Image (cartoon, rainbow, N blue to C red; front, side, top):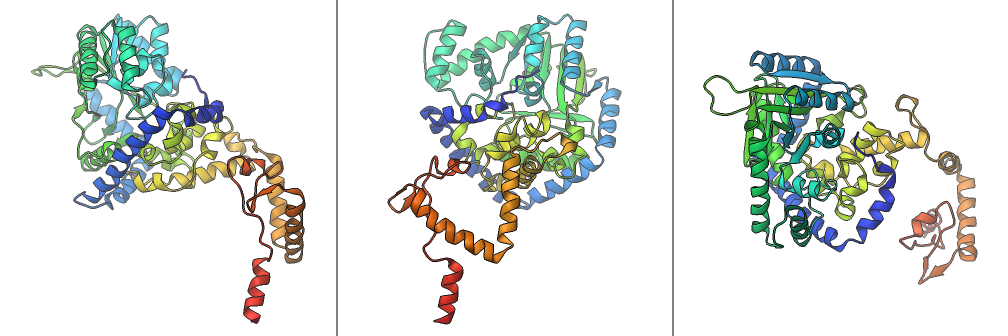
Length: 478
């Protein structure tokens, strides 16, 4: 199982704030891709309203998900492919390893797959004595460093080219260089040997189509195409929600995916895969296996508050505009999914109490909603998660995070519904702030616990000498 480090969110975020290289890299990424995606939606022939169409398509398709998955499996089966349904991460890992052992696999090459990160596949393959090599350049860098990806589409954004040069010098035995084209050639040469020697290729699935019975993989490097056509066995991992009904709907999602991810009209390499190599075809695997994973998605699907998060097509666009992600990067989230998508889906997958800081750490500014290619309302679901942390929820196994805080808000609710009590407390607070709270430059420097956190990084304006209600009455009288 993948290591879950969500409890370290605050410490990891504080560390990231002091990383000057990370701050510069994230700022550059957001300036290029975040703004570019918003501009790309405007240039769509249908206009930016296509995002709302996509939202409706995802809603409709998830309403009949069981039928679509059944149709997809039947059509792939007719072409000689094998479809497996995995209830959880352990089941999916077992399936991959069993397939590998049946074919005496020693080396597997992997295309980029967030789902393989979610289930910790690389660790399980290593334990089984199978070498697994990431072939996406960013993922390859991260794997050589023994690190974790920090972005959905730019996993090595936290590395400088100097760090990559030192890493390649140490791990690949080449002369040091920090020239990006040279580093790319070094990686290409090392990976080409792996492609040619691999017994198995492993990929993710960006989208699937029930009407045609195929899955689609998308990349800009061509590595996924090589990983899925050169080895004799191809295993694809697919989250059960990543499916469309009709090919025309699939086309809409694919165009929006490219724009949301990288402000492109279309990715460099798009592959439609519906089974093993057919008679007369020049390349492709001898066997094709599709593993469709649940791993908590059925529970999310059954909850009307959160099923919208399953509309996500994993473009990473929300990361490219999120002001919180722009400061703390992906490692702080402690799970493969980071940024606004991670702040919603991670608590639902690993436990809302366990990942509480993720949903509490977002700003609710709404930029993620504005840029999402399928118009997912992340802020609404973040508020719903916070409500569960405040009130508790037995259905999700949530304990109230701060029972004292809940009591204070109940008291505050009573106070603001009693005009005399409210006015009296305002008078007392105005007098007390002058006597007991430290001031500087006309601002309050520190509040007492449990409100001390508000003034740890900021000063607050004191209560006005004259209440607004009193001032309003005076103005009306005058």
